[in-house]
Amino acid sequence: MVTIKDVARVAGVSPSTVSRVVRGAGKVGKKCRAHVQSVIVEMGYYPNINARALVSQKAEMVGIVTPNFASPFFGSIASGVAAAAKAANYKVMMSNSSGEVDTEIEAINSLREHGCSNIILHSKLSSEKTLEKLASNIDGLVIINRQVDSLAERCVWLDNVAGGRMSAEYLLKKGHTKFAVIACDRDNQDAEDRLFGIQKAISRAGLSIHPENIVIVRPSLANGYKAAEALVKSGVEFTALIAYNDVMAIGASNALQDLGYRIPQDVSIIGFDDSLLAQICRPNLTTMLYPVHDMAFHATELSIQLTTQKEAVGNRTHLFMPTLVERDSVMSIPK
Image 1 (cartoon, rainbow, N blue to C red):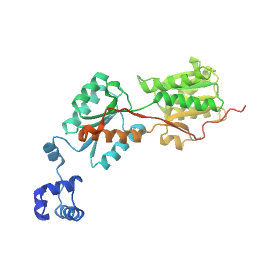
Image 2 (image 1 turned 180 degrees about the vertical axis):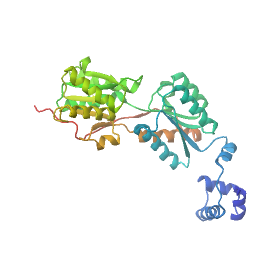
Image 3 (image 1 turned 90 degrees about the horizontal axis):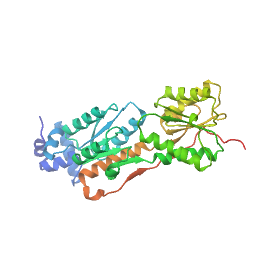
Image 4 (image 1 turned 135 degrees about the horizontal axis):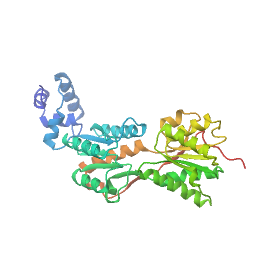
């Protein structure tokens, strides 16, 4: 097997120079770098990542732990992490927690066993105490999509209260006064925050949402469909429907159209996330953009900073804001 010393001997440089070329870090002249790279190709040298991790006591690798990479939302997280890792010449390891605390901890431990000290964690179920303990043992642990006061400098999160408020305010400006909401029933702070923001905006306008106009279900296309059916069958009046996410909004839109309602002429609908589905459904869905790709990119950069330049990180929060994306599922109420 070709070693780094073999490459150095043939190239006529020191092993440390070859190492800098391989890692893409450190000062190496352009001509020297090109020469060493050509020798590497000719000799078929491949760096042993595990060996490098043993020498440096860390792997140049970023680990991701999320509940389900098959979901477009978590796929966007993975995409953002991968983009930032590539820019920093880090590799990526991914693991699903399946939304289970024990599996989540197992996934984190597995990454650590592989020498990974940079971990982007999406966790809604682990307690704050557990997260605090993990952070004390993992220098590069960053929590995405959750805010923990004691770990504020390691949390990259979204203002969901503002997102809910902004969606309701937009519909109010369009002249809507009769609202329905399809919310999420999981033990999920995001769902609570969005509903709180919606109710706050409507209350400020001197209005209210009747309890019967709020349907709480698990987030899925089918449940969005069933929730809209239930709203119609209950006889409640609404001209505007706000859903917890795009998938539920699209399910609701399908149900209403199947029942003879026109979107947006009879009912205006707004979702949350701005997933690809929002752009390809009919009518195209007005929604709140969740900048999850940018958040994941930032979380990865932060994780690497925490393990390489701790003095430069400081104690600061990492709060992102949602933005409204107007499409075709909302219209104004005629005056």
